[in-house]
Image 1 (cartoon, rainbow, N blue to C red):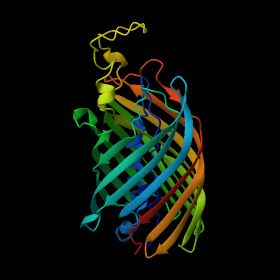
Image 2 (cartoon, one colour):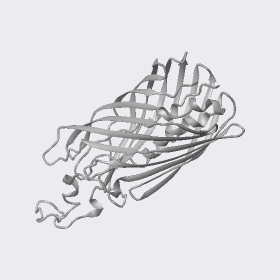
Image 3 (cartoon, one colour):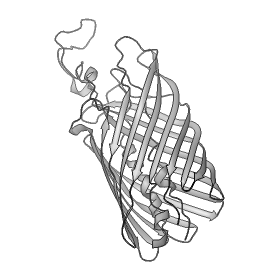
Image 4 (cartoon, rainbow, N blue to C red):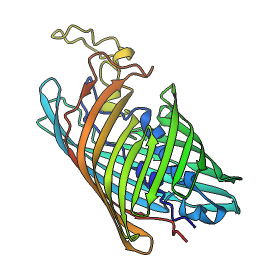
Amino acid sequence: MRPADRAAARATDERRGGGPSRRGARPPRLRALAPLLALASLLALASLLAPGAAWAQLPDLVDLSAQYMPGAAIEDPRPVRAQVSSYEVNANVPIPLGERTFLIPGATYHVEAVSYAGTSPGFDELRAFHAVDVPVLFVQLLPHDWSLSLRVAPGLAGDFEAVDGGLVRVSALGLVTHTLSDKLVLGGGALASYSFGSFLPLPAAYVDWTPSPLFRVEAFLPGFAAVKLLFSDRVEVGLRADLAGNAYAVRDPRVTGAWPCAAQPADDPATEQDERAARPEQCVDHIAYSVATAGVTLGVRAFASVWLNAQAGHSLFRRYEPMNDEDDGIPGGGQSIPNVLFFRAGVTWRIPKS
């Protein structure tokens, strides 16, 4: 049985960063890419060689991770520093429906914790953004070394100050893979996301190349690419690049009850706008955030199939943008965020290889 790694399964489920929050061009939303990229968690199922190898390919049983990014300056219009820490837990329960058929329900909880420095009076310190998803994955092993994976993941994402239909999101993935040899697996398909009234489809491609027991290249586009050196099934060292994003609804009453979201009883003569009339097109309904990172990874097997993981590197791109309830960007609201170093650590309980 080929000891295939389910790297994609444990790889991108936690790769969602957070961004700062400000009044008028508020916190980050991690745009529709987030639920899409999270779908890479089922790619591990792509490299199945035979029914007996299936358990080595399923998503991890449990994955816990935490990520730290130092504070970075944003303009509000004066500099404000925002520091983001991210935490995530994933759990999956593989259920064999037959020798070649599997159903894997799961649950994911992700939180972005934001802290601030140098804020001015009236600054809305929105400190936490949450995402809860309940994915269901179906895997069918097909003849001649083909396999089919289908995944649907409904969920909620927002500050959770209030819960309404606007927090609901749904993502889906369909992937077909073919094992060309015990060293090469190729796959392709499509993924899609619906949130905040917008539908986003994207193509998906997967490759897993293991030319020797000590070296592996794996990529899921548009999610991640990784190169690893493998040592005696106990240590993994490599390089990894990720692209991630998410979308969070903003329901904090300090935002929804203030102008431009809500009309005010009196106009402020010091401003050009008339605060007595709401401006829905300028009201922040949700926020978008996207981030690209690259760094060095290290995995060490602690015992049985439990692994300790760490990654350190640098962000390559970070941007957030406030969006109104039509999913349109608010003029002058979006901005790039300075790139910083990051550190990520976690514990993963993988499904045993045999």
